[in-house]
Image (cartoon, rainbow, N blue to C red):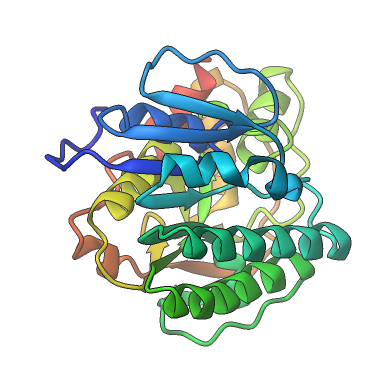
Length: 292
């Protein structure tokens, strides 16, 4: 599937989390821009538009002079160290890293900050979730993400920086962490095992990683005011259905239950207005994963 083709003035963009699951798809879509990428260790990239600085979010004093020298016009912040550790200590640590990053970018004159949050911030398991809905975080991770949103927004406003918060729903696709839901189901079924799914009756909003990358690219390039964008498919799908799609690809029979009662999805009308909509159906996306 081809990425969105957008004619856009070349930008200088600082990126954290660019070597992660979603980040690698983003880098491919930002080849027409000058990129400064924060990485933990040397990485191989085929594109010559990427400059690298080595370090962690926690040692900002070591590399902030390099960012200042680069003078980014925008920052895409996707890094969240320690995943899948969603506990209090990791969440508090990442919250602090994010706040210091936003402060630094404001001080050096960056004009736009885009960050990835989570649908878990809503705390609701029913209905179509809208960006203006009240948030009720249920764990340390979602609380920390929400705190970064609100504190970061205030810091950005004081520095005249556009602040865009995105809430990602259930992102899946090739390269996803093996312990995640869909890769773990694929692994079980490939091995002829019955997948052990806690709540197969739950309905989640699954959105393909390339579509998410297209959305983030569009936001970095075109968003011109501080706001929140949901990024999801706009539809909910039963986890059991996902397992059945995978079983069908491998010609296997599965027998799983119906328990589970959550049913929520993203209202994506706001980002539709920016010119984005998902292009990859669930069966198509899962097939791309299963064939790897």
